[in-house]
Image 1 (cartoon, rainbow, N blue to C red):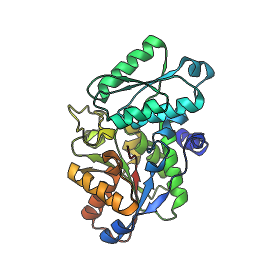
Image 2: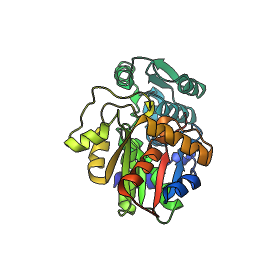
Image 3: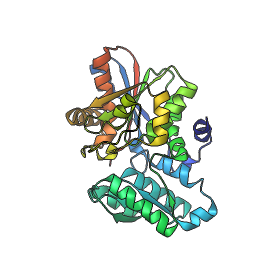
Length: 305
């Protein structure tokens, strides 16, 4: 309820734009269903993450803003925090794993964020960011396990419901779970008949395994190909929401993700990052598994960095 209210009255449009819902004509024809792509790759930072970051940071008190913020991110959340910090005039420190692609590091620095490279994977960067939070009395901006952040991401679903009258299934990529938590929460509130399907790489089945075991499992290792969703444990709040609001999970291989990157390019001339093409790979697999025809299916292109 709180997430839905926050999303309905969100300040995210001070930095975000309403992104197009593009019909993927070639994919639709090939698979006998109407497939739509929610184009979060068209945001200024080429990813949806500025929504949650701005929603959270615009809700801080003046005292918190004056202290500054710290975040950990393997990429797009970092850009979202840096952009929000620039807009709100807040000092931001962003810890990124050493393995972060240079394009993402450069993008954060261009936006004025102070980048600190630390550790091998996201979880190492997170640990160091939490240490800085304590040492320097900064406000930690979580990439997914925060009600305000989740509410910011829920605005993606708000737009989809306004853009298309009839929707059967919405496919959402899953890393830490902030995007699917916000979207599922919003969709089930206003349009409970729409199915919400989460998509993960086979080598990072964070939410899939947790739902199967009804407990937040910590994966011993996660695949690096889709670096944007390489998270070992699903967020606490997202997990509680997913148990109630997510209808199904789908796992896709790296080959299927690569094919989806190509499909997206052929239909809309955008080059999605692997995590950004995850949901589209999921749509194709879902159609083949469930043998459906003539449905309206929406996949979120979550990023293109």
